[in-house]
Structure formats: C-alpha cells, structure tokens
Image (cartoon, rainbow, N blue to C red; front, top):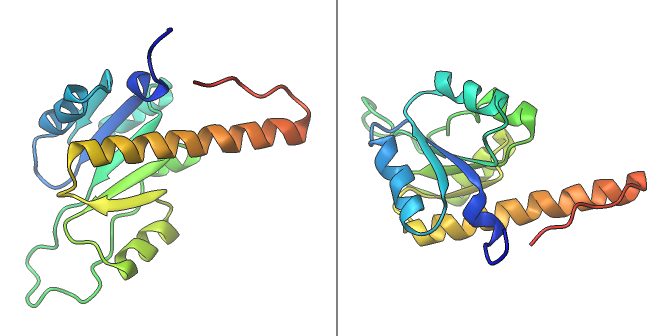
Length: 154
C-alpha cells in the first residue's frame, strides 16, 4: 500500500485488565491512524487473535492494586500473556503509576516496554511504532545471520 506507514496497518490488540472499556481504548488508537486496533477485556479471547496471526503488538493495561492498605511499595505488574510471549509478539504494559523499579520488573517479566496508563494516545502510538521497528530490525539481523534476504519494510 503506497503512501501508508507500516504502523497504520499494524494489528494492535489492547487488553484492558483495569475495568476501562477496551473498545474505547482501541478506538482512541484508530482515531490517530491505526486501522486495525481491537479492544479485549479478558485474556481468554486473546489466544484466538494470536492463533489467527492477527496481532503485531499487544498493549496490556494493568489494573491498579485494590484492597491493599497501605499500597505495597512495589506492586508487581501482571505477567505478559504466555501466548503472546510464545508467538514473539511485543507487549507494551500500561501501569497506573510508573517507577523505575516497576519498569524493571515488567521488563524482566517479558514486556518490551512500559508506560503510564495516563499517556496520551499519540505517545502510545509512537511507542507501538518503535516496538514494530525493533521487531523488524531483529528480523533483519536474524535473516542476515541465516543468509536469507531480509524483508523490506517501509
């Protein structure tokens, strides 16, 4: 498709585990140019999208810690969905409050990037683009090691 950026055709799944309407989150990405954004409210339906090859980037919004007084010093982020990790899909975690320690724990758990849940949709859009570029570069590096031609990208 001439004239379109790769990110515009990205297949992005927004998994909202925080009780916020997942369709609204996906729509905010569609409003700024990502054509194929889908909102899901549970991990169960995610596997259908992954098995169908319909996910390039997964955005997971973590629920805030509840019922804990006082809040723990380091609330643990949720694990990335196993199906996404097995498929090599980069996962972006949105946390209610970000700190270096929370980001380190999320990255150690398997997330590719961490942002605040309050980040503007444009910032999330840019981070999705950066994750897609990283995946494309890694794919090119693997292809050059194997001696295969690298896939051309926009």
